[in-house]
Image (tube, rainbow, N blue to C red):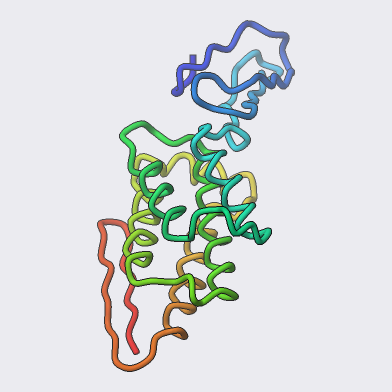
Length: 187
């Protein structure tokens, strides 16, 4: 059993096993059995919660121009709810949430009328949730695999706050301060 209670059956040495994610998750998880017969850490980068998957589908439709899809505010609220749940996010959830934040930042760059002050608070809360200490090992695994990892979160914050700053007219100042992140917008 691994840390997410996935059961790994006996297998031949020097074999990579890929199985379907369990429970409320979609995708696959893989794990290598070394030539010495020892399991490596499982790779959950392709495994995400069904709620995260559904949110990704909604954002994909919004990005494609589907006007029936909820606004950015609704997507951010849902993403904040998913990331703040007490259960632990899997690596695929962290990757997907980071990609969603990047996509939202890019979307509001071209749709500045869809940006609001309330969104900034949700955006900061999501980033804070993703940067919780309990996810350190997952971010390290992503870094070891050569993926962007936590850098994607930082990039999304930078792009989103730049857009927010460019949209504001007149004097404005806002601080979003959380345990793991701080964002200042000031004109």
